[in-house]
Length: 266
Image (cartoon, rainbow, N blue to C red; front, side):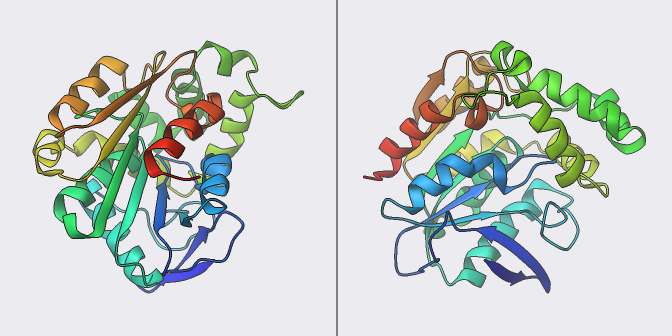
């Protein structure tokens, strides 16, 4: 599905079903330097079980035009304008990493537009090491290798894909090369590093919230994610074993199971 947001063409995957704004809407927001494909299993299932789905490539990523938003606040506002472009009044927001903090900000800023909130691989601060930012700006191949190593748990680094012959870590390399090109990765990392509004946003969230964390996450450690969950009124916490930061691909079935129960998808 193609939409126009802020004058730029945006690609949004709909999970294999036509988008219908009259059905409940679920928006899946990817993380830094990635695109909609990280949600392949979850978005498709939800779309075939009672929901309309939007899994966009964020501006400047993947198949979407425009420039990557320069701040988490700007990305949060963009998500709301995406809903406007699709004709959706309210939505469940599901975000991973940078996408998670943008969804958190959107829920805090626009509570009437957010029915439910699911945050994956998240923390109240998403600080990025200066060496990684420098690599993203000057040596993208090095930045890619740093991210791939830190973003995956032990299974993901040695294989880990349920499909024989496929390797999670190498797929991540190719995705970052494609979706994070043109400066998008560096812009994303700087936006995450500059964001300092986690505690304030969490205190404003009133909708049902699910926080999903990876037990082996070295980018947003589970301890930090649990602290954020504690700041959100009545948030539900799910800790997934044997996976790192990329739980949607490292533990796709467990991730889907938690989301399915939370969203109420049949």
